[in-house]
Image 1 (cartoon, rainbow, N blue to C red):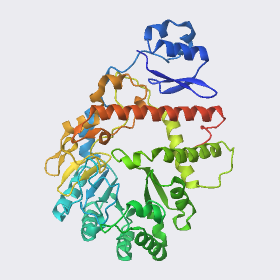
Image 2 (image 1 turned 90 degrees about the vertical axis):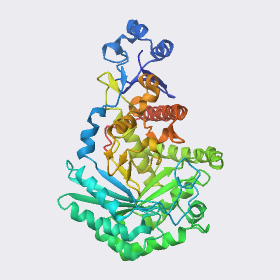
Image 3 (image 1 turned 120 degrees about the vertical axis):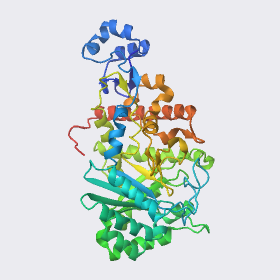
Image 4 (image 1 turned 180 degrees about the vertical axis):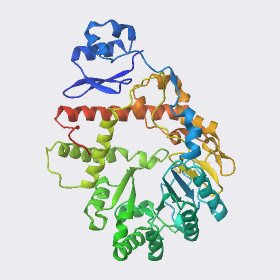
Length: 465
């Protein structure tokens, strides 16, 4: 079997060779032959029309004989000395009850509770990070919730302890907050310790207050806005430490959100990360997707025209830079990772316990804060450390559909994470299949876009951004 994907745009015809990780322009006859042969290695090898490609190293027999992550045998080595970031679940409590929160009870995850991390667990967490980051020059400690600033006193104690522990190592602190408790006294301490602060803000008041509300149902926008204004007034230099996290709700107006951050001078120079809401299991949101997609597609088309200098960019510069970074990343990924051996694995999962490690209030260890707090992905605890066999299983989630992965043309660009395939505390093959389908659809759309930009004269190599 030869693994490739034929691609057709308005002007051009191509194939993507999975094992070479390249997109190759072809003629109509070659396109039809590749579609006709359906990956049959014998037919392709003996076809004189395709000989120039096979002789150049393209369209070879599937190189993958085993689905196994390349870092499987090195996990223990990485875990014991290269844990880069530890995120502490300071509390499971929150002063907001956001409609779409993963802890709201609407999703396959825990709900809000009054559990909090005590200082002893926090100390053990920092000690663990100290012992398991000895091969690194810098580490990151994150504070997460719930709303972590409900435990501001504990955060101060942890930062003080960590400073003493990591006296010979660079240490960076980060916190994710809803912004309602960001009073000036807290910000002064965060500034003194150079803490990076991510504030959840979904746009203008009429949009933000639809979902991000207090337990009483009252919107949180006004207090967050006031806090931000006070911070920038009294600590203008702290602006570089602030970023915003935006969740795009498909029932809202896309342009209203984008224009808000683009046109309000208060946000100038502040990083804004925009994420689309996961609408799975939320019927009211699923039904609103069509109109939302139309708005996003319009914005994206506008971006492509601006990229090609067909129109003058007069709005949403911030959004354009984000889109440009994304498309350059896709293009650059096409220049890497030719499959050279018989072993490979989809590129989605990161190494558990290395790039990130999440510690719950009770001291349990998880790959990161985004995965459900289910036993199936629990790596261990602070006392016993990381279960290496469990980590190996998580990094090799491709075993669920081994043959599908071996023969998947999109394997090199897969982004499926373990969190995407958990349902009711178990790995779901059906959920994995659906994620695979959506993943292939997205990747094909991205490849078509890359081809179109080439056809219309965009110089990727000349753009280093």
